[in-house]
Every structure is written in C-alpha cells, then in structure tokens.
Image (cartoon, rainbow, N blue to C red; front, side):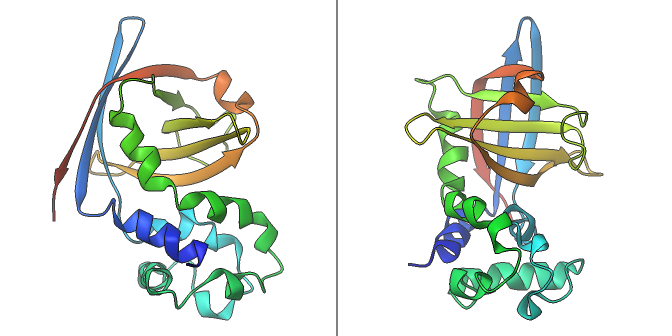
Length: 188
C-alpha cells in the first residue's frame, strides 16, 4: 500500500471523534478537547509545500484540501505522483511517519508509559500559533514525533502541524505536562 494512502487511512480513523485530555505538572492542571477534520490532513502531510503540483491546485481552498485528503484515501493521490515535485524532500520523512498518527493519539490512553504534552509558545515555533503538542519518542529509530494542536475560534483544538525530528531541543524549553486522563467519544 502507498504510504500516503496508509497515512490517510490512519488519519481517517481519527475523524468523527472528540478527544478529551487532562494533564498535569507541578500543581498545574490543563484540560482540553481536540478533533480532526479532513482539511487538516493537507497540512499535516506537508502538501502545502508542494506548490509546483498541478493536482493539488489551490492551497488555500477548503474544498481542494478536503479533496486532496479524499484522493489520498482512495489512492488516487500517491507518493509516486508527489515524488515528482521539486519540493518533495521537504515532506518525505513526514509522510513516512504520518501513517502512525492514529497510534500516536491512541498511545495517550496507555498509562503504562508516561506521555508528554507540551504547552508551547511560538518563540521556538514561529510558524505555529501557541498551543499544545503531543510528543511520542521512538528511541530505536532515534526520532521524536510531534503533533501540534492550536485552538480555533470555538475553543476546540485542531491539528496544526506534524513534525518528525532527531532531537527535542525545541520542546525541551517548553512547559511539559504528564497525561493523567484521556477519553474519546464519537461525534458527527
């Protein structure tokens, strides 16, 4: 199976659900809800970097972003096509790891291993609005996967960015919380 399609399937498993998280650090408690929408896949996969690809079309249109997700889900938009972009190197590793996104989220409920939520400001992430990020460490591969969330106008958190890195330097300076409770309910 194509990795972009696998990523879309993994992302699709997160749709129509509302997640709630409670986390704490040294007497501070945070709680927030987050959801996933089809249009957010476009940015998480890094497709906005591929501005030389005709099939991706208008990068600012909600319709074209949702269409890119649907085409990825059906396998009509794939890595072979994206690989033709002069900018593909910017997203290759991101797409290789994005198929794990549902596992990153579901691991928040696995309390046998402390999960980290980081409250970040945009001092170190000037391209992302302040919010929260989930940090999943993959020591064997020497990678850290970070899923960033920012608050929308309704108070709901949505995925803003998905990064894969070899170090945690940018997040080490941010306030960290340990997940205390995690729940999920189906929504429409």
